Image 1 (cartoon, rainbow, N blue to C red):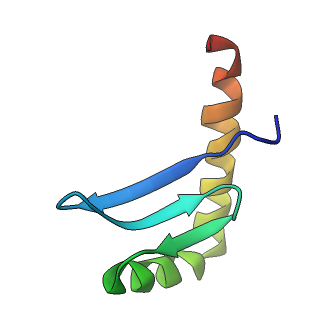
Image 2 (image 1 turned 30 degrees about the horizontal axis):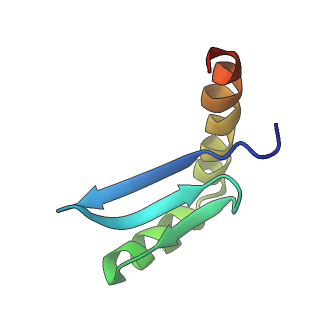
Length: 66
């Protein structure tokens, strides 16, 4: 169960702007704008906690389906 990862990516014009990875536990930016957004989201501990909870709510509940 530890190898399951929740990833939430945000795209604009087919370009990945930033991404949340549950294995890192934070957002990572891939463009200048994405880095700013990642810093903003990473500065909010309640939002980071909510994103970490998505792994349990979404991924772990659907393990038996595949």
